[in-house]
Length: 81
Image 1 (tube, rainbow, N blue to C red):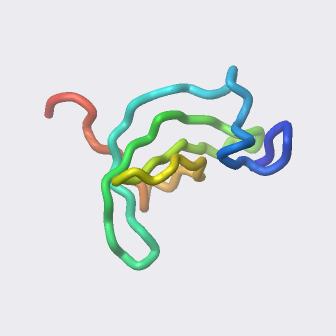
Image 2 (image 1 turned 60 degrees about the vertical axis):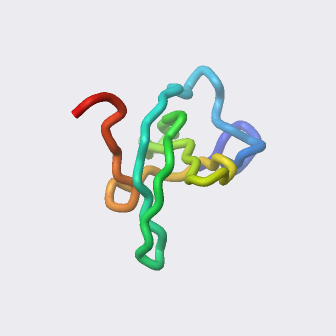
Image 3 (image 1 turned 120 degrees about the vertical axis):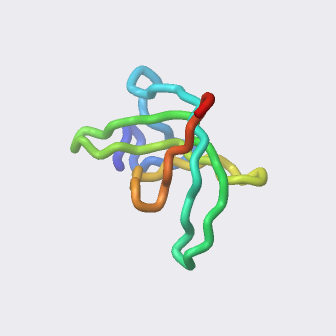
């Protein structure tokens, strides 16, 4: 989770050249079991090979970098089914 300025945070993102920008709708499960809609706007892989996503949940939450967990972040189709 480290970047050139310490921990990965909203004000200390990963190096721009390493980020892959996307638009990916998702469904996110909170620790209490609730689900909400959101979207991933970017992917990044750290030096240890861990996959991170820039995630924003709806409505209107600020985007944050989170380690991608396919058990709690479900990718939804972004075009027809």
